[in-house]
Length: 179
Image 1 (cartoon, rainbow, N blue to C red):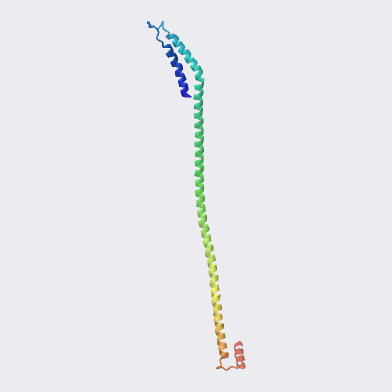
Image 2 (image 1 turned 90 degrees about the horizontal axis):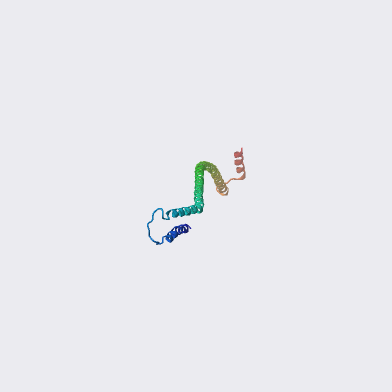
Protein backbone atom coordinates (compact mmCIF):
# COMPACT_ATOMS: atom_id res chain seq x y z
CA UNK A 1 0.00 0.00 0.00
CA UNK A 2 2.77 2.39 0.91
CA UNK A 3 4.77 1.57 -2.20
CA UNK A 4 1.70 2.22 -4.36
CA UNK A 5 1.26 5.66 -2.78
CA UNK A 6 4.92 6.51 -3.36
CA UNK A 7 4.74 5.30 -6.98
CA UNK A 8 1.57 7.35 -7.57
CA UNK A 9 3.14 10.52 -6.17
CA UNK A 10 6.34 9.96 -8.18
CA UNK A 11 4.29 9.46 -11.36
CA UNK A 12 2.26 12.61 -10.73
CA UNK A 13 5.46 14.63 -10.23
CA UNK A 14 7.68 13.13 -12.93
CA UNK A 15 5.30 12.70 -15.89
CA UNK A 16 4.46 16.42 -16.26
CA UNK A 17 8.12 17.37 -16.06
CA UNK A 18 8.99 14.86 -18.79
CA UNK A 19 6.14 16.07 -21.01
CA UNK A 20 6.96 19.72 -20.51
CA UNK A 21 10.67 19.22 -21.05
CA UNK A 22 10.35 19.41 -24.82
CA UNK A 23 13.17 20.76 -26.89
CA UNK A 24 11.67 23.97 -28.28
CA UNK A 25 13.73 26.77 -29.78
CA UNK A 26 16.29 28.41 -27.62
CA UNK A 27 16.16 32.09 -26.95
CA UNK A 28 17.12 34.32 -24.13
CA UNK A 29 15.10 33.38 -21.12
CA UNK A 30 14.65 35.95 -18.45
CA UNK A 31 12.54 36.00 -15.40
CA UNK A 32 9.88 38.12 -17.06
CA UNK A 33 9.49 36.28 -20.34
CA UNK A 34 9.57 32.77 -18.88
CA UNK A 35 6.76 30.64 -17.57
CA UNK A 36 8.37 30.34 -14.15
CA UNK A 37 5.55 32.14 -12.37
CA UNK A 38 2.96 29.92 -14.05
CA UNK A 39 4.87 26.85 -13.05
CA UNK A 40 5.12 28.04 -9.45
CA UNK A 41 1.41 28.80 -9.52
CA UNK A 42 0.61 25.36 -10.96
CA UNK A 43 2.89 23.71 -8.41
CA UNK A 44 1.22 25.62 -5.59
CA UNK A 45 -2.23 24.57 -6.82
CA UNK A 46 -1.01 20.97 -7.11
CA UNK A 47 0.41 21.01 -3.58
CA UNK A 48 -2.83 22.58 -2.28
CA UNK A 49 -4.94 19.86 -3.92
CA UNK A 50 -2.52 17.19 -2.74
CA UNK A 51 -2.66 18.57 0.80
CA UNK A 52 -6.46 18.74 0.62
CA UNK A 53 -6.70 15.09 -0.46
CA UNK A 54 -3.94 13.58 1.67
CA UNK A 55 -3.90 15.71 4.84
CA UNK A 56 -6.91 14.10 6.56
CA UNK A 57 -5.87 10.47 5.90
CA UNK A 58 -2.34 11.23 7.09
CA UNK A 59 -3.64 13.03 10.16
CA UNK A 60 -6.04 10.15 10.89
CA UNK A 61 -3.21 7.67 10.41
CA UNK A 62 -0.95 9.44 12.91
CA UNK A 63 -3.80 10.04 15.38
CA UNK A 64 -4.79 6.38 15.11
CA UNK A 65 -1.18 5.33 15.49
CA UNK A 66 -0.70 7.49 18.59
CA UNK A 67 -3.98 6.17 20.06
CA UNK A 68 -2.88 2.61 19.29
CA UNK A 69 0.45 3.20 20.98
CA UNK A 70 -1.34 4.78 23.97
CA UNK A 71 -3.71 1.79 24.17
CA UNK A 72 -0.80 -0.63 23.98
CA UNK A 73 0.98 1.33 26.71
CA UNK A 74 -2.13 1.17 28.90
CA UNK A 75 -2.46 -2.57 28.30
CA UNK A 76 1.19 -3.09 29.14
CA UNK A 77 0.82 -1.01 32.30
CA UNK A 78 -2.27 -3.02 33.28
CA UNK A 79 -0.40 -6.27 32.68
CA UNK A 80 2.54 -4.93 34.68
CA UNK A 81 0.26 -3.98 37.55
CA UNK A 82 -1.48 -7.35 37.37
CA UNK A 83 1.86 -9.15 37.44
CA UNK A 84 2.97 -7.01 40.41
CA UNK A 85 -0.26 -7.88 42.21
CA UNK A 86 0.21 -11.55 41.36
CA UNK A 87 3.81 -11.39 42.64
CA UNK A 88 2.67 -9.78 45.90
CA UNK A 89 -0.06 -12.38 46.28
CA UNK A 90 2.44 -15.15 45.59
CA UNK A 91 4.86 -13.71 48.17
CA UNK A 92 2.04 -13.56 50.73
CA UNK A 93 1.12 -17.16 49.92
CA UNK A 94 4.77 -18.19 50.34
CA UNK A 95 4.92 -16.52 53.75
CA UNK A 96 1.64 -18.19 54.77
CA UNK A 97 2.88 -21.55 53.48
CA UNK A 98 6.14 -21.20 55.41
CA UNK A 99 4.30 -20.39 58.64
CA UNK A 100 1.87 -23.25 57.99
CA UNK A 101 4.81 -25.60 57.37
CA UNK A 102 6.44 -24.54 60.66
CA UNK A 103 3.14 -25.05 62.44
CA UNK A 104 2.70 -28.49 60.86
CA UNK A 105 6.24 -29.47 61.83
CA UNK A 106 5.74 -28.36 65.44
CA UNK A 107 2.36 -30.13 65.58
CA UNK A 108 3.91 -33.28 64.13
CA UNK A 109 6.67 -33.16 66.76
CA UNK A 110 4.11 -32.73 69.54
CA UNK A 111 1.97 -35.55 68.15
CA UNK A 112 5.04 -37.78 67.86
CA UNK A 113 5.90 -37.10 71.52
CA UNK A 114 2.31 -37.83 72.59
CA UNK A 115 2.18 -41.01 70.51
CA UNK A 116 5.55 -42.21 71.82
CA UNK A 117 4.41 -41.50 75.40
CA UNK A 118 1.17 -43.44 74.76
CA UNK A 119 3.10 -46.32 73.23
CA UNK A 120 5.55 -46.32 76.16
CA UNK A 121 2.63 -46.35 78.64
CA UNK A 122 0.89 -49.18 76.77
CA UNK A 123 4.17 -51.11 76.59
CA UNK A 124 4.74 -50.60 80.33
CA UNK A 125 1.20 -51.82 81.07
CA UNK A 126 1.63 -54.79 78.73
CA UNK A 127 5.02 -55.58 80.33
CA UNK A 128 3.47 -55.42 83.82
CA UNK A 129 0.67 -57.74 82.69
CA UNK A 130 3.18 -60.14 81.12
CA UNK A 131 5.31 -60.12 84.30
CA UNK A 132 2.21 -60.75 86.42
CA UNK A 133 1.16 -63.60 84.13
CA UNK A 134 4.69 -65.02 84.23
CA UNK A 135 4.72 -64.82 88.04
CA UNK A 136 1.28 -66.48 88.18
CA UNK A 137 2.44 -69.21 85.77
CA UNK A 138 5.56 -69.71 87.84
CA UNK A 139 3.52 -69.89 91.04
CA UNK A 140 1.07 -72.28 89.38
CA UNK A 141 3.93 -74.38 88.06
CA UNK A 142 5.48 -74.40 91.53
CA UNK A 143 2.13 -75.47 93.03
CA UNK A 144 1.74 -78.17 90.37
CA UNK A 145 5.27 -79.35 90.95
CA UNK A 146 4.70 -79.35 94.72
CA UNK A 147 1.38 -81.13 94.27
CA UNK A 148 2.96 -83.66 91.92
CA UNK A 149 5.79 -84.24 94.37
CA UNK A 150 3.37 -84.64 97.26
CA UNK A 151 1.18 -86.97 95.22
CA UNK A 152 4.19 -88.99 94.16
CA UNK A 153 5.44 -89.23 97.73
CA UNK A 154 2.06 -90.13 99.08
CA UNK A 155 1.41 -92.68 96.35
CA UNK A 156 4.84 -94.17 96.79
CA UNK A 157 4.33 -94.21 100.52
CA UNK A 158 0.97 -95.95 100.32
CA UNK A 159 1.97 -98.38 97.64
CA UNK A 160 5.24 -99.16 99.24
CA UNK A 161 5.05 -102.36 101.20
CA UNK A 162 7.92 -101.33 103.44
CA UNK A 163 5.74 -99.04 105.44
CA UNK A 164 2.79 -100.52 107.19
CA UNK A 165 0.25 -97.96 108.02
CA UNK A 166 -3.14 -98.91 109.01
CA UNK A 167 -6.21 -96.82 108.80
CA UNK A 168 -6.29 -95.93 112.45
CA UNK A 169 -2.78 -94.57 112.30
CA UNK A 170 -3.57 -92.42 109.20
CA UNK A 171 -6.70 -91.07 110.82
CA UNK A 172 -4.78 -90.14 113.96
CA UNK A 173 -2.03 -88.43 111.93
CA UNK A 174 -4.57 -86.39 109.96
CA UNK A 175 -6.49 -85.46 113.09
CA UNK A 176 -3.27 -84.30 114.75
CA UNK A 177 -2.45 -82.15 111.73
CA UNK A 178 -5.93 -80.67 111.54
CA UNK A 179 -6.13 -79.93 115.24
